Amino acid sequence: MTANGLAAGWDIRPERYDTQDATALRRDYYDDVASRYWRRPATSREVDEGLAGDGVEALAPPTGQFLVGRYDGKPAACGGVLLLDAGRAELTRVFVRHAFRGTGGARLLLAALEEAAVELGARRMVLNTRLDLVEARALYTRHGYREIPAYCEGPYMEVWYGKELAAGG
Image (cartoon, rainbow, N blue to C red; front, side):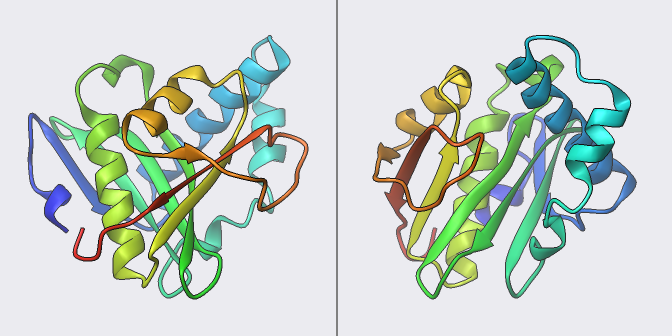
């Protein structure tokens, strides 16, 4: 993956979703999105409940991929792609820890996730998010994602995006 090399302190690589660093990043991701949704800090128990049975095990080949980004060696970001069918992958669990935002990691993570989706055989990336996650929505639109009709339903899904992926990254 071309985005895996070091660039401006970032190193983004595939990693099992259940390593210590990946698990801590997934916890921080869920804490962040849950706390914003509830407009109060999520409790440790709520984070545990949110992560239980969340389907993350599908984010491993051949059905998906999970990536961890490190900034100067420190775990700083994560994200996953999940194959939905022969041509589509879903972007999920995209997160950059607050201390590392503004360092270019989100752009590199997104590029690496798109490349991972292409390597899994996807030609199109889709995602769903909430309207209050304005930073995420801005990132996606800045990188060519456009609003699409809903392709799935759920309690935390308010807007859907899609993008055609270029073969070869």
